[in-house]
Image (cartoon, rainbow, N blue to C red; front, side):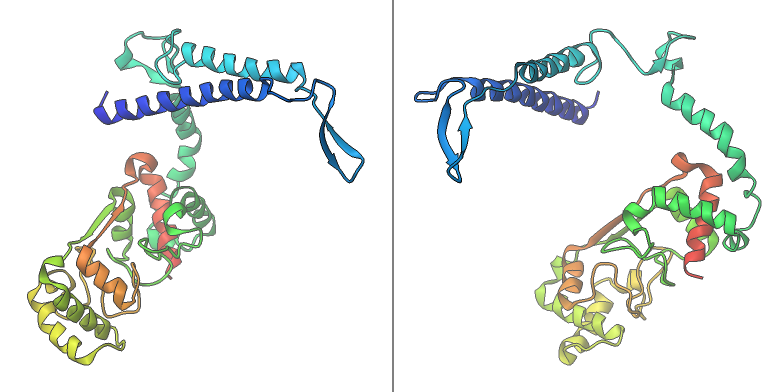
Length: 308
């Protein structure tokens, strides 16, 4: 077990124990008698609207014992089953019926996934040989691709695929890594890692100048003197290596086009300066191991259709 995994297991054990002990203490604290407290069945002296009075009636015994029973059950469960540790019974979700060799065990999850693949795999496979551009126009295939998108992609790119701060809009025609079927498929299958290195070392004045220059690349208003000085900074500070001398970016590197109206992290002068100063790091995880080639093929066709 890794050091990080051991830490989090210990963290969960300690916090679970605190919660259980806290619940036990809460029952004891609320049920203990207090000085000056009215006797059971007597009014406490609290009245509302002149007629409504509060009686000192304890919690029903069945409710109290149910609470105690819940805590006892929790302790027994965590002792017997692998909730906080492996458990005294040694129970596991792995299938031990055929082979006791741990390395050869097939978990219930894996068996269920194999059964699902056997049942649904042929449905996805029938689209395998159809070109992405043709699938994008196929209503049935597009519907399947959309359902895959809503399951695996909307968490970052949104249900409408228009993205959010730091997550690209998939419904426009601006693509960091290219918009051909093969490029989209590679993005989904293997993932992408985009890094904008920080340039704090060039100093605040030059950062301000080059940020103003970047504003002018997309035809926006900026301080003319600073923008002019920023041209030279853009050329000498390493910006052209990724974004090019014309600022139109490089899909091979995932370097964005600075001459259009699309901004992944914000288009204000302050946001641009922050990007230059601190850098940015974006990570698109690969999905090949999770989805497989056939599902990725359908998902590619759906994403491809969004900007058409």
